[in-house]
Length: 589
Image (cartoon, rainbow, N blue to C red):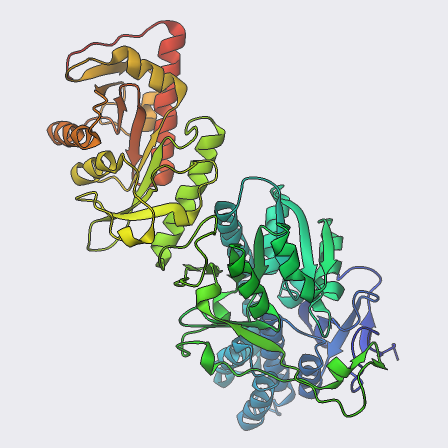
C-alpha cells in the first residue's frame, strides 16, 4: 500500500485513504471524478510530495475535508458534492432504486464536516435536489458544478485584476496574499491567487509577499509552491511581519479569498485576515477579497452570524510533530476570523463588485472610498479608470486634462464622471463622482471629490442624445485642427468628406459629416448650453464635437463605442492635417 504518512509540516492525524502517487505536478485539476472514486490532491503532503488520494467512501470524504487533505471553500464544496454522488451510487439497490434516507444522512454528515465555509452546505444541498432523479443525475450535477467553478474563478480573477489595475499605480506591483486561494483550493485557476496570476500574465507583478499563514502554513507550503510552479517571483513573509512590510511601502495591494461573505460584505477567511485588513486600512492600501458567488451567503445580514470553526490544540502546540509548548498549555485556535466590511475595499465575484461603505479607511489613502457603490456603478468606475490610464499613456489626457463619464441605468438621471484636478495616469475607481446627468450637480459632494469642470458638456450630451458614455480628450491632431477651425464668436466647423473612417461614427449618411467647433468660453456652463442647443437643432449630427484649444468630445452607446469614435475622429483629423486638406470655415453647419 502506498505511504499514507502526512507531511512533516502538518500534525499527524488518523490515517487517510490510500494515496495514488503522481510522478510530478498536480496533473490537471485539483479534484476529479473517476469510476474508482473521487481523486483529490492531498494538500497535507505538499510541497515535499505531490500525491493524489482516492476517496471511495463517505467516511473517507469527511476525513479528507476535516484533516485538510482537501481545503479551500470551493474545493471543499465540490468534494462534498461528489461525496453525495458517491453515496447515491453506493446506496442504489437492485432494480435501480435509491435508498434516499441513507443518502440524505450521509449528505448531512458531509455538510457539517466543516461549519464556516458556506460553499460546502450549498454544494451538498444543490446535488441533493437531483436525488429523486437517481444517482446519475446527482453525479451529473456535481460534475457541472466543477465546470462552473472553473468558469466562475476565471471570471472573478479577471474582474478583480481589472479592479486592482484601477486602484494602484501603473507599474509592476508588490502584492500580499494570505493562505492559499489557487488551483489547490478550487476546481482550477483560483480566486485571489488566480487574480495574482492574471496580473502576472499582464506583466503587472514585481513580487508577491506570501504570508506563511500559521499554524498550518498553507501560504508557505501551498501558495509558495503554486507561485513557484507558475514562475511568479515571491518571498515568504511571517504573518507577524506583514504590517511592517506595509509600513515600509512594500505592499501595493492585499488580495485574499473568503469562505463566506455576508450580505453586508463582512467576510470570513483564514485566521489572520482581519489583522491584515486593519494594517492595510492604517496604511491606505487597497484590500480586495475575491470569492465566487457560491461563497456569498445572503441569509446572513452581517458577519456576526458566521460560525467560526475551532481546531485541535495540537496544530498550535506542535510543529512538524515536535511539541513546542509546555504540557497542559491552553490554546485558542480558530480556523477563521471575520473582517468587517468597513475595512474592505471591494469584494469581487464572477458576477459583481461589492464596495462596502469604508468609513474606517483613512483619508491618507491614495484612492479614498467615498461611498458604497452598487454593482453597475462599481463596474463603470473600474472601466472609467482603466480607459483614463490608457488615454494618459497615449498622451491624450496629459496631466490632469480630459474627462470621461458613463450614464448609469435606473429611473433617476445619473452619470459617473472623473473627478476634477486629478492625474489621469493614476486615476482609480474611487476618483469618480456621481452627478445628476440633467443638471450636472454632484450627488454626494460630501465625499471630497468634485466632478470634472467639463461636466456641463457631458450632461448637455446626455440631455439631448441617447448616449451612454462620453469621452473628452486632447489628442494632438483633433486639438490642432480645432484651433485652426476656431472662430472668435460663434461656431466653426471641420468638414469630413469621403473618408472611410466616417463609417465608424454610425452616421445616417456615412460619406460626410461636419464637426462643430465651439469657442472655448471661460464659463464652461456656457459651452454646455451651446452644445445642448446645437445637438437639439441637429439630431442627426455626428457623435463628436471640437472645442477650440480644448480637444474633442465624442459619445456612444457605451464607453467602448465612445472611445472608438474619438479614435476615428482623431485619425481623420490626422489625415486632413498631413495632406493639407484643412477645409474649415466659420459658418455654422
